[in-house]
Image 1 (cartoon, one colour):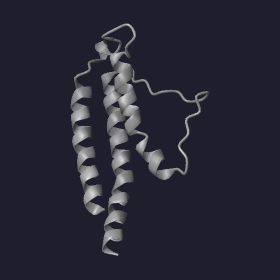
Image 2 (tube, rainbow, N blue to C red; image 1 turned 90 degrees about the vertical axis):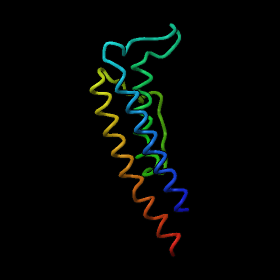
Image 3 (cartoon, helix red, strand yellow; image 1 turned 60 degrees about the horizontal axis):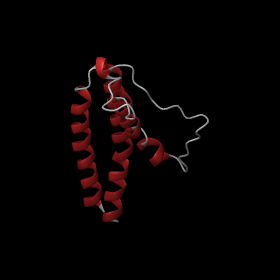
Image 4 (cartoon, rainbow, N blue to C red; image 1 turned 120 degrees about the vertical axis):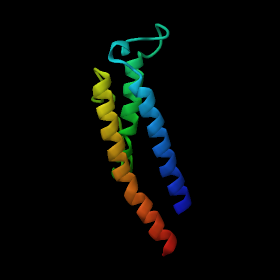
Length: 111
């Protein structure tokens, strides 16, 4: 189990590093760009990716994770700086949540 958790943690680290590099390349003046009129705007898609990383904490800490469409308001960054700041905060929170999971998995394997 520890190898699996370590593997997932390493993958999370690699993927968040790669994602940040892509987000850094989205300039604030291109947030509204769309490759097609039916497509997400670049800023909307980037905001969605950043928001998804923020779901780690409630997924691990809540009994239920429910979206009420009547009250849910998707995150929408207004600038690249805001996007990167929220991304970094969400990654740090996710790592803080995942770290105890790694420790518990290690203890369970030894026990």
